[in-house]
Amino acid sequence: KAGVTQTPRYLIKTRGQQVTLSCSPISGHRSVSWYQQTPGQGLQFLFEYFSETQRNKGNFPGRFSGRQFSNSRSEMNVSTLELGDSALYLCASSFDRPYEQYFGPGTRLTVT
Amino acid sequence: AQSVTQPDIHITVSEGASLELRCNYSYGATPYLFWYVQSPGQGLQLLLKYFSGDTLVQGIKGFEAEFKRSQSSFNLRKPSVHWSDAAEYFCAVVVDVTPGGGADGLTFGKGTHLIIQP
View (tube, rainbow over the protein chains, first blue to last red):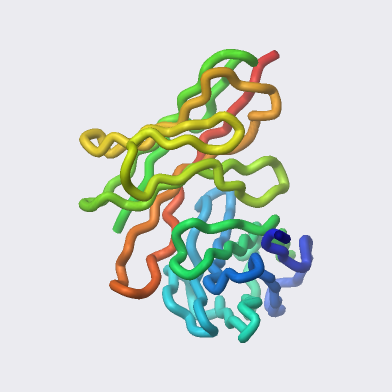
């Protein structure tokens, strides 16, 4: 069974731009969660989607948003990029409840 | 809110020696507990999990972890490390905050960087 895939793997954007990251979960998994990883703050929960609905949200500004499609694929969007948004963005999927989560390789976003 | 503490930022172990990585959590009820490993430039790989039952759980790559409720700990162990075990290790917890719904996302510790000496 294929694992969680994320595209693109690397991205360089300029401050003020917006970016969209994509995540395809493991087949059959309906819950998708997003995390931000930075050297200073570590791993932080962004939000979780289940059946196309945001079920939980972490403590991030509204510039961070996401959505989930009927095939469980998910996207996250960051608008008005700031330098501090430079991070590794990880997507994780699980069957239904977000307990046993399986992570993708991440998207490395660099904001200049 | 729950929190996870990994007191050791770096640990250096000789190849073939035993390993124990510490993890303490702060939460009133028993959370679901996990250990993940991350190699440079990679995502997180699930090593093992504890939901309930036997407090000693076995994982992949020869790792095990023991849940101790009285100490709020979930320490990771391996009897003999290999050079390929060098990586960042994260302890994580998740709790039910929405009955019948989702959880509040995984809460991670800051990680322990494992260095293997030849």
